[in-house]
Length: 382
Image (cartoon, rainbow, N blue to C red; front, top):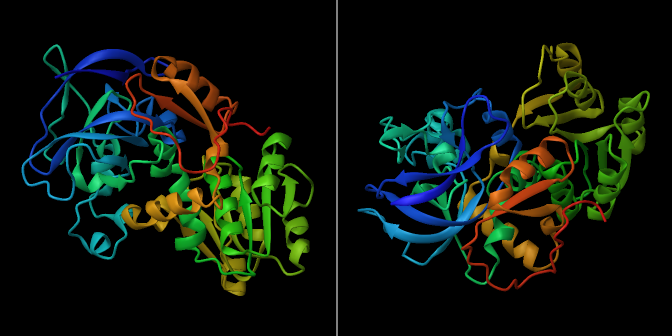
């Protein structure tokens, strides 16, 4: 079938809308009509071809409606509302332990540009176009997805609001709740108050952390962090930042979460820890960085890389949806909505930090009335 998609090609700053041909779903796959898709910084990095082959349809925070089932699909039905979140094999030790982000084949499934047999679901005038980015390629009106990529959603929640739960928000919240297993009364410092960092702040408040320190260079984002649960807000460029953070508790933080790529922030995220504290990071430093081995040894401190918040989407995402309905996890305040046709503007706004979490909405999106808190349509601190 012919679909509308945003295609990423060499030499372009953002994906551009075009028409492509989409295969029928194969065994174990579904065709999903995409209602909305969040834009993540991984999409920005992949646009230049560093992460995945070009030309490709990116997008990995999709939400939509199941239109067609391939042979053997048993967990879903046509008409189901679904959120798309990563691809995994289902049989390796990590998948069996309910840690699909660490699937043995996660990297080729995520960035390989096609199925595991190297075939692609997309083509343009007979020439292959790379697909299956994160198992979905959801910057499109429709996507072919493995059934393990999908999480069933209640039909009374707004699909355009749920889309960002699939990557950035599950990463921030999962890092607090699942990876760090932060306990009530413990403390955490969050470096960077974008979508991932603010999701971590909200999750830390949700579980009852005693001190939640937000660090950023933007006064507006720090103010939003305070509104969402941060007990202390510090500018990232202040002198003796690690010392100032340690002074908040008198002994340092039980944990830190670094959402930035700046090597100096990795240092501060370690230096602010209390004895036996853990520094989690969700992206790699851009440039050379040497972990401080003696402070780690002498203080029993840990450095921990985290993918997808160490969370199992089919269990964790419904939990976040319930917290949102209760008004306890207001991630809708992070969102700014753009028509699919304005994907170029959305990419530029994300790149320049003008918005926290851009979300593309497709023209034929099915968006039922929300059954949760009133959503802001601005996405910036108000």
